[in-house]
Image (tube, rainbow, N blue to C red; front, side):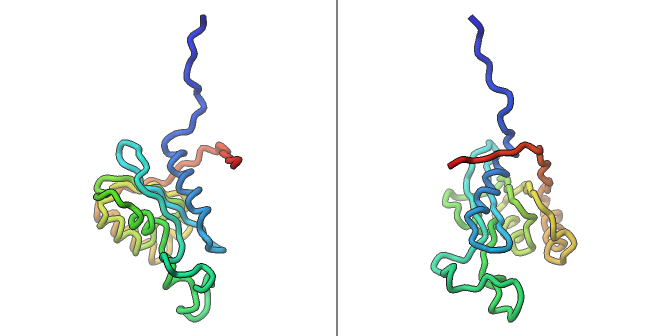
Length: 163
């Protein structure tokens, strides 16, 4: 009798958690940018997820989604980013020493919350705003605070859900 062996093509932890971050981002109603985040303990347990959207009680139909125009008529003063939502959604106590998987490199405002929450590592996918003042300030603070930054290395594997 041949002994059964484990399958070999299972996804890595990084693929799994970044997949959860991207899947969370798919909940966003933002017509332009969908960002998801997943906070994970050092022993690879999912602690919280979040995506960019308006705060609870602020209607997705009544607040603006525009990117340009009078500032109060754009989404920017109102939207809570995916990283911030993941931090605020956590109900289990301290996030000290955790990892954050996020589909887009955090802005300076999210960096402040990440540092204050005690998150020690960020695995990010896109860094498309790398040269903007917000991202440069974010990197400066995260580096000063000793937060490890790692760009996600895409495997090229296609993953599909049929739900």
